[in-house]
Image 1 (tube, rainbow, N blue to C red):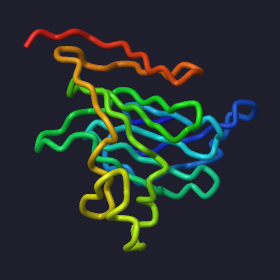
Image 2: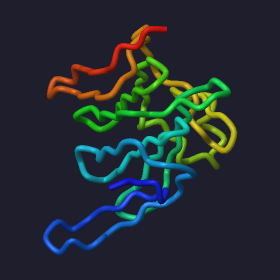
Image 3: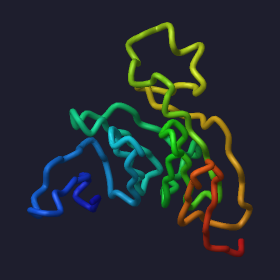
Length: 161
């Protein structure tokens, strides 16, 4: 679960106890996803950041800034591909963005990866460029879903601008 307390909690459904507490968020959580292999948790927030944790260690390993504009654009939905390497995000900016989670930004101390990385890295090791993006014109993305064949589908709310 994610909430206004700026944490993500993982629960044992049999006992009702919190078994993992994931921290590092600066604002409210808007969406959550767990990788198909169960190793990573991903959360989007109201300021437009995406956070990736290693569930085994509870360590924050990657942050993605989903909107490069100066204003904040909430991330409303996340979807992971069946292999867990492609992350799709969508939100109030009317874009579907696909991020490469296999890029080594968690190894930000290694100077060799920056030039050859699929994504450009911004300040503090933030991934700032998606691998690809699609504009929906006037539709805010509310739900994204990958099929078993890695076809990406989305649902949104049409807005007049």
